[in-house]
Image 1 (cartoon, rainbow, N blue to C red):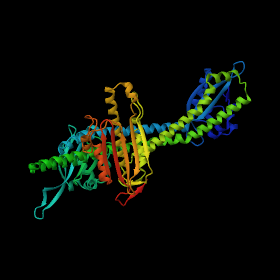
Image 2 (image 1 turned 120 degrees about the vertical axis):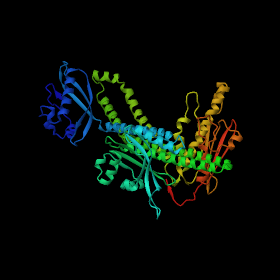
Image 3 (image 1 turned 90 degrees about the vertical axis):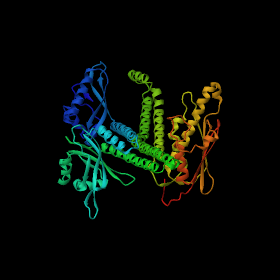
Image 4 (image 1 turned 90 degrees about the horizontal axis):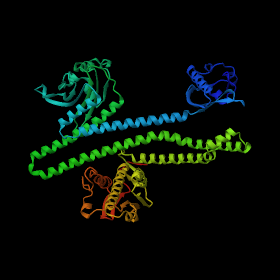
Amino acid sequence: MTNINGKMQFVNKTLCENLGIAESKFFQVENYDQFLTKKEAETIHNSDTICWQNDTKYHSEETFTFVDRKQHYLEIMKVQIKDDANEVLGIISLGLDITNSKQAQQKLQESESKFRQIARHEELLNRLANQIRNSLDLDTILNTTVYQVRTLFKVERCYFVWYRFDKSLNLDETNSKYLDCWEVVNESKAEKVPSLLGRYTTKQVGSWALKFLQLEIIRVDDINLVSDTKMQDFILRLGLTSFLSIPIKTQSGQIGVLVCGHHTSIRQWHDSEIELLKGVTNQLAIAIDQAELYNQSREVALQAREQAHELSKALQKLQQAQAQLIQTEKMSSLGQMVAGIAHEINNPINFISANISYASQYTQDLLNLIHLYQKNYPHPPTVIQDQIEAIEFDFLIEDLPKILNSMEVGVDRICAIILSLRNFSRLDESEVKIVDIHEGIESTLLILQNKLREKPEEKAIKIIKNYNSLPKIECYVSQINQVFMNIISNAVDALAEKRNKRSKQSNPNLLMQENLPTIKISTKAISSQQIAIIISDNGIGMKEIVCQKIFDPFFTTKPVGSGTGLGLSISYQIIVEKHQGKLNCTSTPKQGTEFLIEIPIRQKTKQTTEL
């Protein structure tokens, strides 16, 4: 508190401790800059001036350096002090340390920024993957890759190199020793940049060749900073000043290298660019593998036309493998992204959760203090009474604890969702785990909650659970979660299809009287070695002929563009082939569908981990 001359009249103990100044010294200072930085002193002086000149409350957020040498955020409020004659006597200033909440807000913003970057990289990678894998011709795949990468990364050159054992470069005809070489087979370059297409011996490539063969990622921001002169000379002969290379290895064992480079300038390669380019090379390796498989199939067709039927089946398997690979990759990417999002959200939520109880206690303490004031000073001044009425004080006292309680409920809800997301996102786990199967079902239902809840003109889908006591089972938990997701999602779609057909044919009043859309989930132990999960719905149902094909690859009853026909096919493989279980479907038109899943309690594997 300062008087009209700006002289300190009162300062509390907390401020003295925060600034590391004795209380007695505060009353001796003439200017703020005697105990604050020049910028801090100027800020306070300006706010004092505004408060002197305007007969209103001054409110702002300001930063100050405390005795701990850290920047602290303070919420500042200043107001004039007047006597009975309405003469200004001074200014009273209040400051509330809001550093923790500001830091939490900053962390949340950083998390959002990181999420947006992940989403952008996923979008770019998916777009490039679709373009790269739009063909089964190897030359087209490589040409598309180098062009799209050069365009995306804005480099002067992008080219692809194969490592080859070349019989045409024979050093010694007598002992038939063959020279291995590196061949630039495809490139995309700026107009005035010379071509690098052709072959280069391992001797020419030098030590770089060993790094490529060891599948080492090479990042050179400035070739002049490379200490090995021989390695530097080879790159300079190519005319490159800066380059980034990512090697790949195909399923057939071939080694290739994707290279981005500049000729007229240096470039600092960022980690995010490297991660994105690694994603591109992963997609490229898959596309090359698919092209090789496709070419092998064509060769078989040319050599044996009479085996057309077998060839057709081989091509179908190729397409199925390709589609399943894409599906698996998408689920893996989804799992990584979901796990990342859950982790990023978890940090600020933990902070909020940890502080809500304190906030509730502090609020209750303040309310108790106010009640004491009301009890001991039942007749406050008019200005206070007016303010009590203006802010609806009685309602505020009643509603504030409810707000804090709602916040606590919301945080608990978010924590439960994060736990379910983390449980469901174990899509990269390849080993057998010992798990509670009910946790996987509950995680799936929570993720699908938006599809299950009530919407305008749509009834909520009722979930009936009949869980029996089950032992923990050994399984590939991510794959089992994927099966639950596929089957329950199909049940939701079947219920929606039934509702849409009925809405076109029936009286709306009759629709309201129909049974609620329902999904039933039951579990039971059918023996000491096996458990069963039954998932049924009262949706549109299927005819027997359709039900017999439901697990066939690419078979779908959904409109074009709405389904791949792989969900139940993959689910069947997971249950039957991966877990030595059973997956059966029974359905009655207009009544509903039931899936019966039987899984062994123990898998035939020696390595298991308990979750």
